[in-house]
Amino acid sequence: MDDERRREFGRSFEQGGEHYERIRPGYPDDAVDWLVPDGARDAVDLGAGTGKYTEQLLRRGLQVTAVDPSADMLAQLQQKHPEVRVLLGTAEQTGLADASFDLVTVAQAWHWVDAAAASTEAARILRPGGVLGLVWNQLDVSIPWVHRLSRIMHAGDVYKPHSRPDVVGDEFTGLENHLTRWTDPLQPADLMELAKSRSYYLRANEQTRAKVLANLDWYLHEHLGHDPSAVLQLPYLTLSWRAFRR
Image 1 (cartoon, rainbow, N blue to C red):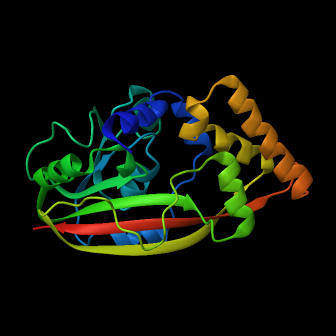
Image 2: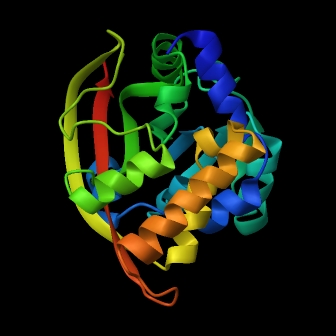
């Protein structure tokens, strides 16, 4: 994806923070515990959105700064966590001081940034030995019914479990990965709402949106035979990577 197309898709998330906060999943404890280094005091969450990952960092006692280009997303974060410092900015240009953090995280957002520029910026604001953490939640498409679901939803951000991030600069060493398998309990109506939070749906016209929802309705209720009140365990993978500032 070229720079302009990436920016175009990323702009899909500048609005709709309340819906995103309500329907998108959080992150499993196992994945966060692996990523956060012992003794870390402060972190910056880049592309923080509504604070799904920020919240996990707060639970571990870190002082967190949240950076995102969307004021709407950050408003959701600040409403829930007023103690967090929030800044309008990007992963490529944060405006933060040099060598001021032990941890930089980018959860569900690295594919929206200029990875080379964001890597350089992360290295600038990290202290020597600090950690850059890149995280993705994705549907576990190794399971046939989930694979078909992802195709209907146009969930394009699906990576092989041991794939590597596009760019992590020479300022970093020791890129390591961690995989967590888990499930999120959802009703069919929640899955319909989850589809509405995807960039494909957000950018689509009304005709395409109606088609996506009709196909999902057929798949969940007629093809798979789920009652509207059923609780489905939606399988996820959380893919985490960490690298250390030289």
